[in-house]
Length: 207
Image 1 (cartoon, one colour):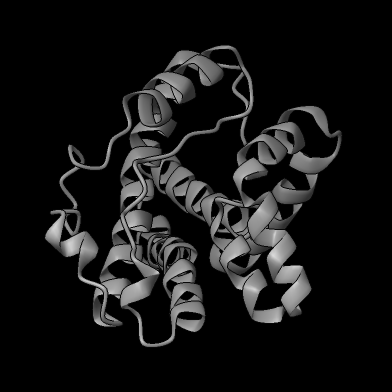
Image 2 (cartoon, rainbow, N blue to C red):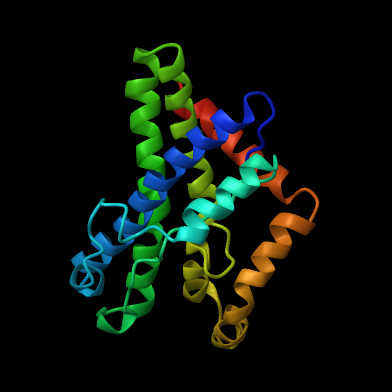
């Protein structure tokens, strides 16, 4: 989550233009890895494409981030989730975890490539754009690794929870979005925690 003060409208537009393709890369990575592990659902649905049209959620990808940015609030948004059918995996729990990790991993890889190759080679406005690409992709990776449904980190919990714990997890999974919303907007310090991780990663990624 990032806030805007000076030149707020321009920065908000810039961040949204970076956020949308970054989220699309994230979602396509889920579908690509799922396809490689035996689930062709995303491919059959035409979602293994970087064309933004099949992925954009009008509210979650455009309207909500724009409203939050213009209100100088925390930036929050999503794309249409790429469909995955764990029943088509030979190891549903393990392969679902690998598929989930593919999204954050793609954002980290994109951040490293831009941070190590593009950022040192440019200056001025292109340098600022490269910085935002790195920062937003690192934030997407950190944010999506929170162990709260429907985020990717929650897909790792069934691997480590005992049977009773998995049962409780699946029962409360439907309330994950409400828990996530409350955490982000009402729990003091939650944004600082994630921002701290992003700042630490920036020191590693940027030269």
